[in-house]
Image (cartoon, rainbow, N blue to C red; front, side):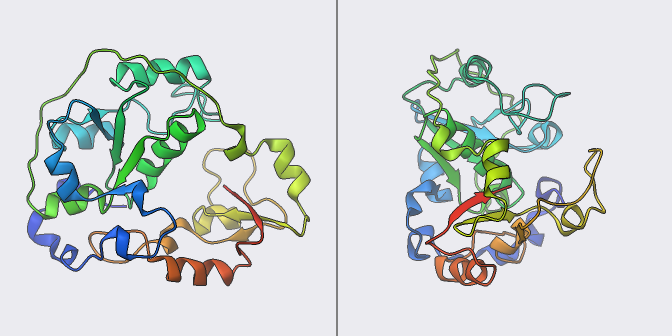
Length: 253
């Protein structure tokens, strides 16, 4: 996806008629904060804003006070891309960002909230549910000509206590056991090229898990210069067409 931090504000005119998250019918609209809310909380010491875009994009310009993650996948290292960090390593990473047990975290990106939601999931996995995602992300913030900064921000280390929640994590064995199970849907949200095996993403074999259904993650977003998550009714409709219904267990990958 093209970096919107490198484009002009005049190219982002399509942001004006975005329906607020609380009017889209979500079961939990509270996962989002608006650009208005974030601007009002830029100086709030209890809020930590996290830029989950690539380092060079953060260096160009970012939301004032935002900290930059070293690796927005939260994997064990830049070389080992397989697993989420263990409890101690993840706690250290959050601590260095100034994120403690009582911190309100707000993540944003320029990719339709893809990376911001990864941050939210990782924090939820380690028991920190006080995390939000900026609706419309940096493109909306930038298009509305809100405050910007090029200053690299840092905060004192905070105390983060990891409390893993295995209920939202599917192990390899659980996925294997789910293959062919009628009550479970394996939902592959990767790109079309990854689904077909054309793009192996550096792995030895391309393809997909047997029995999985495919819906590339971009299908969950509105079109235009400032993509946002589709309204709930639209999400239910496109998911139902793939057999993903509320009565099923769903494992995404």
